[in-house]
Every structure is written in C-alpha cells, then in structure tokens.
Amino acid sequence: QVQLVESGGGLVQAGGSLRLSCAASRSIFSFNAMGWYRQAPGKQRELVARIPSGGRTNYADSVKGRFTISRDNAKNTVYLQMNSLKPEDTAVYYCNAERGGGLGRIDYWGQGTQVTVSS
Image 1 (cartoon, rainbow, N blue to C red):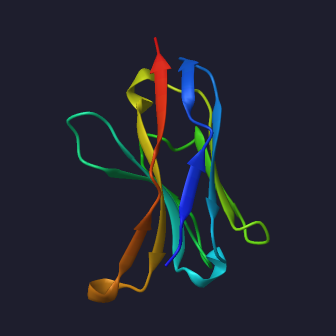
Image 2: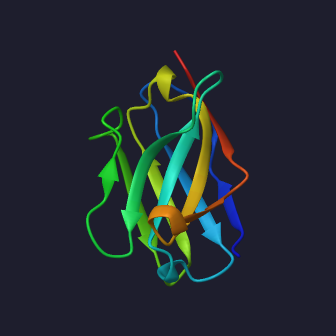
C-alpha cells in the first residue's frame, strides 16, 4: 500500500504555468512507474505523463513540449511541470503509482488536484 498526496493545482490563465507535486508515503523506487493522469468533466481518465523507474518517459501527444514529468527518489516525490497551459488542460489531475504488469498490474491513486485554466 502507498498513500499519494497531490498538491499544486489551482486557477491559472491560459499561457501560464503550474507545478504539481505528488508525495508518496513510501519509496517510489519500488514501483514500475509513476505517472500523472487527468479527467475532465464528462470524459474518461487519460494518461498525461509516465516516468518508469528505468527507461524513457512518455507523454500524451496533447502535452508534448509543454509538460515535463520528473521524480526525486530521495524525496519520494513526483512532479509535473506544466507550461503554456490551455483551457483544454482543465481537469482533475491524479498521481499514479504502478506496480506489476499485465493482468497482475496494481494501480494506486491519489485523491486528485484540480487544475483550471481560464481563457
């Protein structure tokens, strides 16, 4: 088990920036990957960015070049730097910890943090 606590959301104008943080209650190094997902009203939850313990990060096409995911294993924290924000980035952003793979995959989720981008 792990508790994930997000922070850093808020209201920002289009073109602005926010930095989300996700603090984990235990070492994140033991997880296959950490990630950020988002869910807008009336839409399915979608992957925004994912950073494996080893390997390359991956991003949704809609955020490539604007968002950057990073991790600090010593602080058990994952970050999402969001630049050049657009109104369509408005959503609840969730931190994710991924353990295992395939049918054995287990996902842990934070409570979410609201990001609202005004035009």
